[in-house]
Image (cartoon, rainbow, N blue to C red):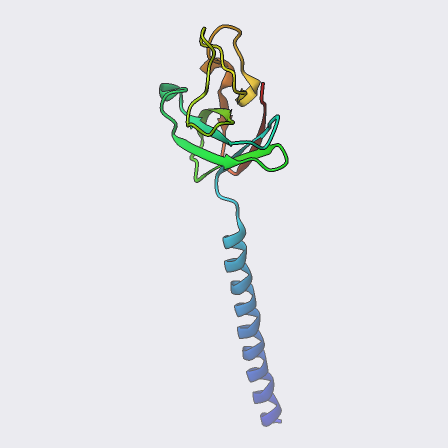
Length: 151
């Protein structure tokens, strides 16, 4: 009987160790799969030529100094700019379809854009750049996907 008791104790300890390793193993895998503060900005474009250039901005640098820039290829007229490791806060996003891939938003003689552009909240002004007030949004963390209409 003592032999059986020892066997059960060993089996219990072994079973506990296996269960513990499985639980620990699962939690380690789960931690690796957790999305960590990502903002995505998706645009629909008129064609697949060139690239889409995006910027994630804070108020002080709106349309001048991006907190995080992104340059992405267009696939089936869709582009997805991804900004990772973004702390919670208030941001605005601006993007443009750089069809000739020259690094700038081309404009006509009076300064009106001839390449499509979009902003968060689909902010637009008729005779000037989109305003921070119209484009800003509050980001609380996690994964956030926004869509902008290129015009």
